[in-house]
Length: 180
Image 1 (cartoon, rainbow, N blue to C red):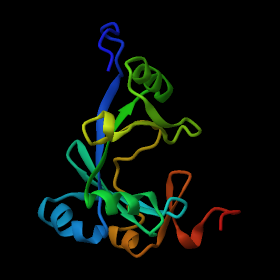
Image 2: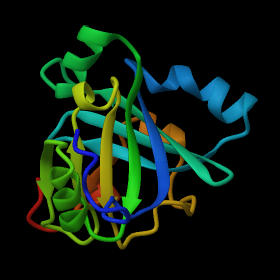
Image 3: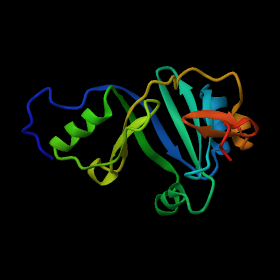
């Protein structure tokens, strides 16, 4: 990759937000992350479009995102078949995803998945072959992803009671109008 860019022209990372772990059944992680290590459930739900269930577990100044496939045809199912359970990605919070994408490309890092369609979650990625095996995700968001919800539990997520709509987890029986 290019190292001749001017100093200070690199990506402006605010913080590492979370590490995501892909696994076939996130319930298997609960005894370690919640009971033994004292993690706190923050939020979660199913993304029916991608076929992936997510749950965020908080620790002081850090989160782990658990990712479980819901269907055999999800991209996560394919990843688990190829690589098995383990690290899926690391997410960095940035102020401006478009600027981040431009700076990464200027330094020779091909990016993928640039999506700036929502202020709730704008993102771009660097694929694992360029980052020593870890997918790197860069996100700008105006939502609070760190305060634990009081509206539902980890068990509710495991029971498929929640679904993501516009980056907000909703009970399946209270979906916004026009959503099936």
